[in-house]
Amino acid sequence: MATNTKYAANPALIFTCGIVALLPIIILCLLVTASRVRAQKTTKSPDCLDTAQSQGELNECAFGKASQADHELNQTYQAILQKYSDRAVFIDRLRKAQRAWLTFRDAQLEMMFPSGEGAGSVEPMCYGLYKAELTQQRSKELRQWLTGIEEGDVCCGSIKTPEELK
Image (cartoon, rainbow, N blue to C red; front, side):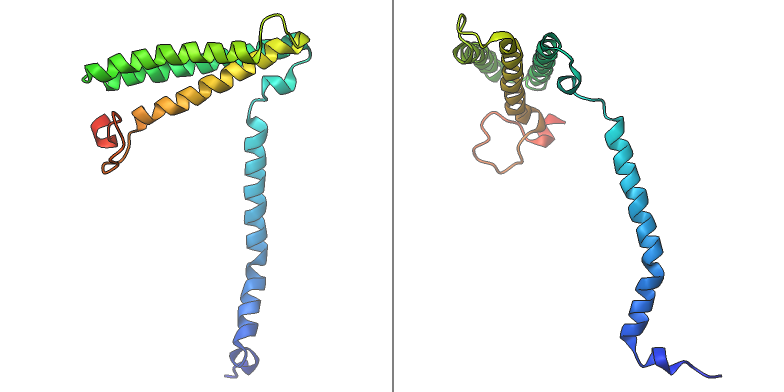
């Protein structure tokens, strides 16, 4: 039986032939993955700011975003009240801090968009979007009380560890 010494003597050639043989399979995998990613992107619902046809619709969209952010903040706040119900002093301070933050947010909005100095028909949209942004930032800040901080962080203050939150 004759062996093909051309391949046995050249390992680089064997490797190259192996890669070439696998190339169609690699290309097929890449195409399937790309089509799945594209399909996921197209099934995502469009943002109302992208689909609005008038300034009134843009304003409505912005206030919808602010309302959604308020709803998420309230859910986060209520969840913290539940998870920390065993810490009366913390709950009292959280309520005090949240009232102060709401006052700050409203003052920040008034500073940014003073009454009587309007920017025209876009101001309600800008106001709503800024309110949503500030509220989302606050939700993010509060969520750390729900996710917890790993044991050993000596500056965690009132934040429980993930184990305590279970």
